Length: 443
Picture (cartoon, rainbow, N blue to C red):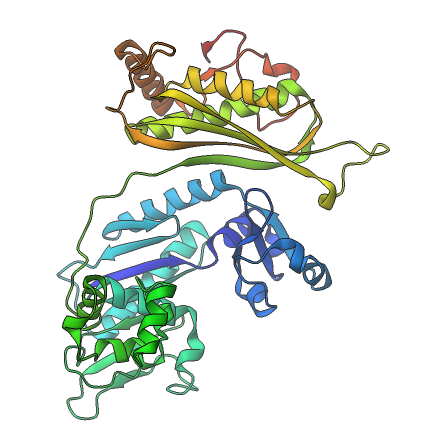
């Protein structure tokens, strides 16, 4: 049996952890350039603020309803996600699916009966809330596709109104066999494999639209609807199994309670991004430079942790000029970016910082910086090297040096060794990484 643990409106609730005043207000989180909504809580969604909508289209709506609008802080979200996965790993073997989702393999000794599963789900939600303060929904099922269905149902309790208008703890039983089909608590839903293999209607799956199934994209949903398949239950009971594509056949098997998508090794990350907003903004070039160095230092460590190299680095900032002694209005700020491509992939922090500093200088004169970020892309395994005479690829000595840096930072703290030139004691910004006036320094 699997349990899919999904953090509700994860980015929004991460912002609430540091701002208790946001508790009773709708909240949305914008993308790294404050362009579109990437996360919205339930109150915001009820106002029509859907994920993916450009912010300029809903700005007036946000102001009218006093919606809290936050720039994304990916470093904060990743730290909280790491803590969430550590907590879940204390309960069972986990398979991390995304920054806010993980599959838990419920121990075989745990009774797979409705009351026990519901009690286990309630324990998990209370445990995460007490230890981390993040609300989660849990879907339990014998397969991953069904677990995603259960998790979706947990987040949309209106699906069950026609079945249980009064009691959220009702257990539904088949009138013939008496076997439990599914049950729901305040935040968790589970599905048992009763009658899933038989092609008889299932009341929960009949409420799930085909577009909401895990693994069904827009094109596949349109094709299935043209064939008269509009719900998950209709797909599960589809007689023409051999006429469908292999991915759709696998989804059907999973809907019938037969596991197909087993544990898979985690795929390599295709890009690494670190950015944050500043209030008050950064106003001096040394402060911006050292903040960027600390970002690249962390990204390079993550790159080497994956045993990878990158061939492209991108630096971006959101800036504005000081107007009559006041800060630039939000709508008048300007986002600019520049990128550099190495001839050979690298994971050497020194090369990445050198390239990042050149990109920073190319972005124009120093102004008020409201947001700063760096991104590493074109990711390759560490064994991939090009052959050219214009740029030296990472040598074994360089790799060994970076390994020592990572080991010391892991043991002594993230900023035990930094790369930079500026004496940060002159800076007033507490978020900037402390450095000494030589290339590689220790505390």
